[in-house]
Length: 405
Image 1 (tube, rainbow, N blue to C red):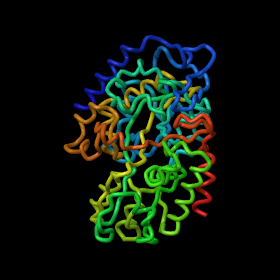
Image 2: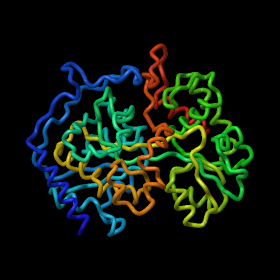
Image 3: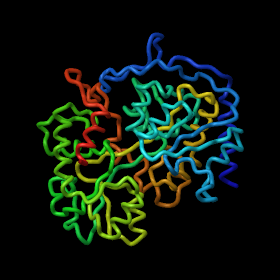
Image 4: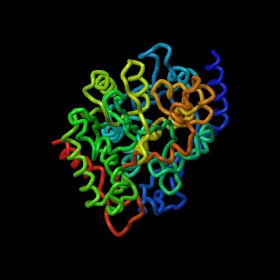
């Protein structure tokens, strides 16, 4: 009841900010969309209108989400942050879950979904394709409480124009079996140059974006390659990362994308070292697997997910209402604990269980600076180079197929 009361107050406050309906260009210029910073290689987004006012709620909202981001009580009756939103706004929510970023992009391109929880390896694809609209954060009161270091980043904005609201984030950590992997590793070399020590029991994330993990390692171990951003690779740099991953492949027992399978693999000893998420490490420990997870000395890749709005949505008011609701302290805290990630809203940490935000390093800016967040590779080099074209996500997808054989 206490939570419902707080939600009602938040929604009421939000309603006061709603004055009508309207849109404007997503850029101050009249003849084009937002233009990226020098670090984004001058990338120009399509000119998609942005809401400048929000009016009465429509009747429905179609949500496209990672599993666990839009729970409505059907998984666990005690886990429901959709129904309170429906009761307060009248927007009836229909949720579709997706399993990969590629699936999310394809579904969003169908135009059938109003909002999506996009990871950084999907968000720029959606922006570049004109599938999502710039977001007027002035119409989202809870945006003010989002950690500043998650705002205006390469994966969720173009030229300072936000294309969504940050939701949650985390690092891709190195997990190891403490009985087998000794001494305790401090570097990603455990899964690259030293992977043969655990041949057949190395595990890696099954996605083209995992190429960035190899690039991150090469940034430190082969500086002559000139890699400044693991998501901004020219052909030579991509080839070096692919070569490293092909060597790793000889020692990989299995690639994972299902976290439950990774937990089981570490419990049985089929995997003893590999990339993971903090929530996986926590669950593995709960199930008595002898594991630890660390942020290696080279730093790590990671994710910062963003709620984005369909460019052609017929429910813009419900969409803005949803974004304000889902990053509210109450909902953001609930999602973060259920999903296992750091919340984006600073005030959410006042509502999470004791020690949760410390475990997930929520708000720890020094820790966050060590994370290279998933960002869609595009032709315009994200490291600012203009004398060369960079490889695209499509190139990475083809390379990943080649790596796995």
